[in-house]
Amino acid sequence: MLYLNRKLGEAVIINHDIEVRVIAITGKTVKLGFTFPSDASVLREEVVEAIKLANRAAARTAGALTEVVGARLAEGAPEPPDG
Image (cartoon, rainbow, N blue to C red; front, side, top):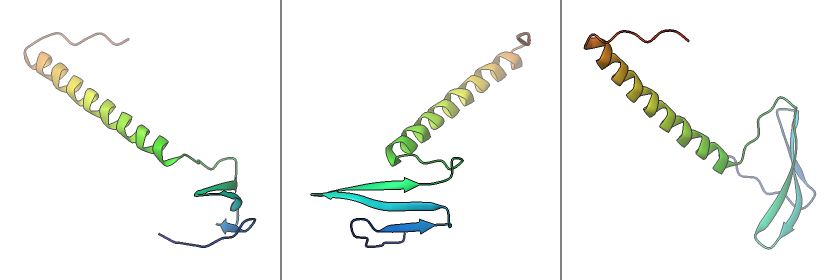
């Protein structure tokens, strides 16, 4: 991880097209402004973590469903119609 010190109004440029600027400092809170290409994805850390948890839960559900269907097919149950 890279650590940088910036003062109010100063910025950091990433990959020539992403700017992160210190907009305000109030107590222990720092307000950052971002300028970036429209195709860039920017998410807060807590949103990324929530997405990861949801994806893991969905994968477990899909895996369990696959096991149930596989067991039913092994028992000789007919395959469900496409649809």
